[in-house]
Image (cartoon, rainbow, N blue to C red; front, side):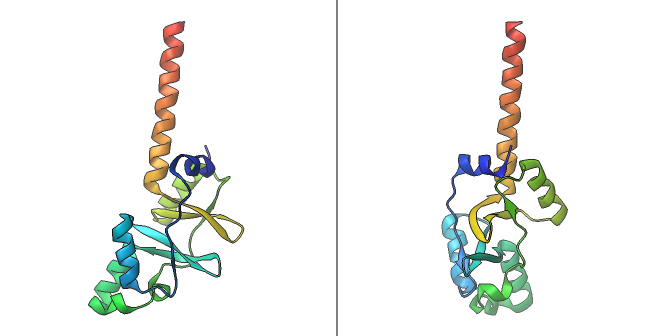
Length: 142
């Protein structure tokens, strides 16, 4: 069970912003796409993550003026990343240890996907259910 398998099931569309995007525009994109975070891309590589937490922190520190800042000023950096060959369980462990909910999937410097903790838990549950169904079928045939 690898990250590549998760991406195969959910798709590889990556909603991202640049460091020069305004926080206001990035928030509008989060809302329009109904997502909680997205990678920040600079020169084709992941520069950081922009998430709901960054918005909340900015609002708490600067109020509405934080919406006029650039994403590069408020993003969480450096981004914690995974590779396609990494296991789902390793990624879940990393997310738990580092207290993050989203991971860019990278190949070299390039981003090839983006997974959330929800994506990984859903995939893991589907795998467990498939194993349980296979076990039930095996027992019924015996």
